[in-house]
Length: 480
Image (cartoon, rainbow, N blue to C red; front, side, top):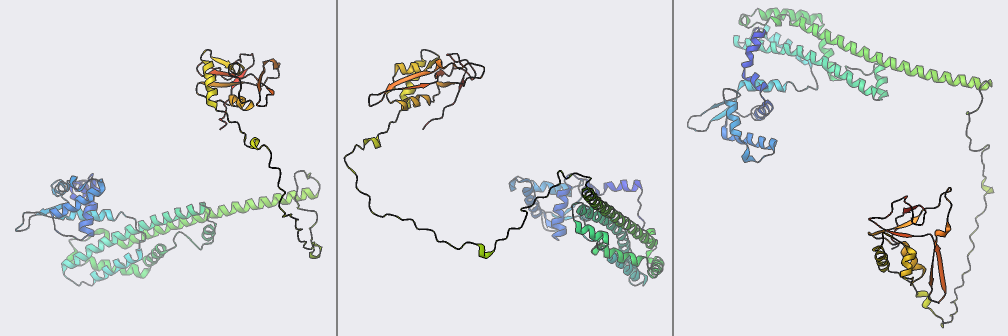
């Protein structure tokens, strides 16, 4: 039967239910659900309630919504309506619940989508054997006219499928070529050597063996004569006069042309891959020869004294090997034992003052911070010497160090920067602090002038010290 492939005929097919299903917005949902239930699941004529429950579970899983919020029955009614035509609904005798089943148009769309999935292996040799077997069966003239027409249509579909398989094989060879090139570019040296030597190629594997078997059979003169005779006898059958396909009359020539085209593409890909590998090997060999030539030229210039030895050095661990004979090694000498006197020490004089061992001075910084805050209430900054005039030292040097390490949120401790080379160092700015120790002896300490400044009006880093020297803020770590 000849199919009309004109533009008007194909445009009229847009109203077909299968075409509408493929163009629908929810085509993935419809095809996936109908294929799961009726094609893969093998169901026939399910009640609408059961079918709605299955669709509701699928929609709930896809949307992540509770089961009760999914209107599955509305989807089914739309698919079975005139705008859909993908489900057929009818009422069986004695029942008020409709029964639904997939339509042939829906199965056509599902089969077409399933055919889009990539096939890992295309067995063209087996498909060619099927075409020959069907021709032999039809040429025998056995069976009823209806059976002969059915076999003829199946033969036409198989022959067109074989032509499509040859194009798929060509695409598979191109994909294999890209894969080999990517692996070789990624550094697979062993694969590059195998391809260059002809041990591995694009047509390796079952795909290539099946294609070459099909190609050899198609080019066989015996098979060509047999195909011509079988096609003549088949198209002479009276039952096939109304459904004869003109393309099938010349199918053996179309198959040879398609196989030869695929073979030429494979040859071109193989030659291109090997040529690229040969160029790569030639460039690598040329680079090796250039390196060797440079080494030889440098060696000749060095031996002739034409090139100085500056920068040409070789590091040696020693001028001569170090040899240590076993008899030259010293004998083992046990270590000397230290003399230890285990006698008890003599008892000392018990009549001595031990309070000095436990006498420790701990200065509380809280009162010192209060003294500084009280002095800063009257002025924005105050010197340490002024604070000590109002509150003399009670614990000596320990209390003085506590003053220097005070930290508080209300003031900063300002220390003067070291004097610059171009600024004369005036030691008159140093302060002398005096106190009396617990033994009644006078003590004194000289230190740079230290100033406590309030935070709100305190001097910034690099400002001028009241005594005339540059000052900066130095954070003081808590001694505790």
